Image 1 (spheres, helix red, strand yellow):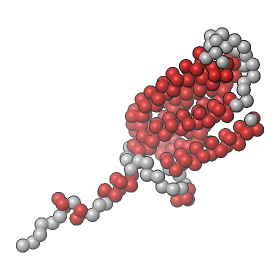
Image 2 (cartoon, helix red, strand yellow):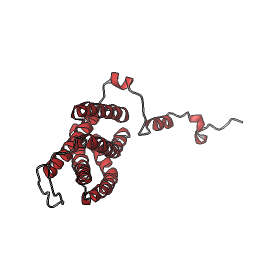
Image 3 (spheres, helix red, strand yellow):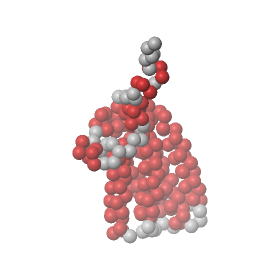
Image 4 (cartoon, one colour):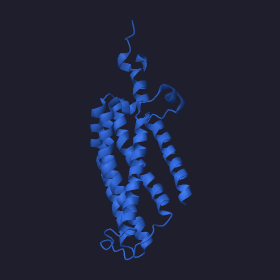
Length: 219
């Protein structure tokens, strides 16, 4: 299981970076998202080890005996946390990208996207934390461990990585956050998430299609 963890991480993170490049037309945004995801996984695994192996606050959580962490726990956490982290990333950054494409400067785009999307991410994170925290009261140590690890992962990813790390990094990067080499932009498929193509199409629509713009006929 430990030998499969590194290839598994490479495949998961690599696919995430590629897909986010297609969606956001950026190099640094997907890399930043992958780094935040890895931080969330490490925080969750560290918390699980501290409680269930080292015994920190074990009595508070009702952990009677401590011992080695089950071998499937890292792979299980990576799979679940990856899905949730990418959901939160798309919810938050898609609105920022949309504002930037439609004319806002980079800092205004970050502020606008955060203001409109942060509540969705917070609500989703609180719901998932409540669900996962319910497993902490289970009698079986394995179920308790899974619930605790996932709750910590969602807490860290939503409220530290997505709410603090992501807006701060994008604000500091400015226009560089949305930069992509021309050769890479040509290779990747076009996905018009922001509706930029529709705006451009409506702007260059022929004038004769507009009844108000038609010239009166001569008599």
